[in-house]
Amino acid sequence: MMATPPVGGHTVTMTNREFLVISGVRQVESFDDEQVLLETTLGLLKIRGAGLSINQLNVEEEKLEVEGEITALEYIRDRDRQRGKGLLTRLLK
Image 1 (tube, rainbow, N blue to C red):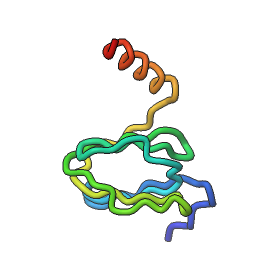
Image 2 (image 1 turned 120 degrees about the vertical axis):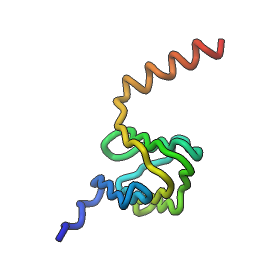
Image 3 (image 1 turned 90 degrees about the vertical axis):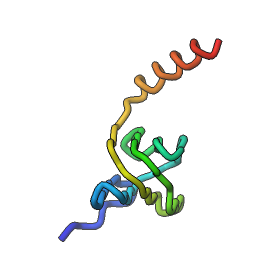
Image 4 (image 1 turned 180 degrees about the vertical axis):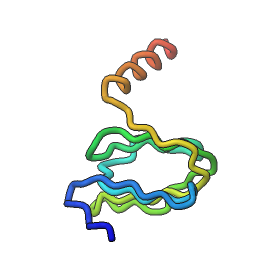
């Protein structure tokens, strides 16, 4: 039996690579049907796949549900995020 995570904690539960329940979600940075980028209590989380959709977002409980074909979960360091912004900025000049 799994204990309930502490308030402000972060958990990721995936079922059959088709359904994710994530706690500790502070905000959704961006999303489309191939990628969801979240700010969590433990940093940025990138979810990649196909046909992705956000079924539920509860800001008060910091909980998010994602459904679709999930192919990857990746945590991103803030400096990697800044590096990516610099590249994007250079490309758009």
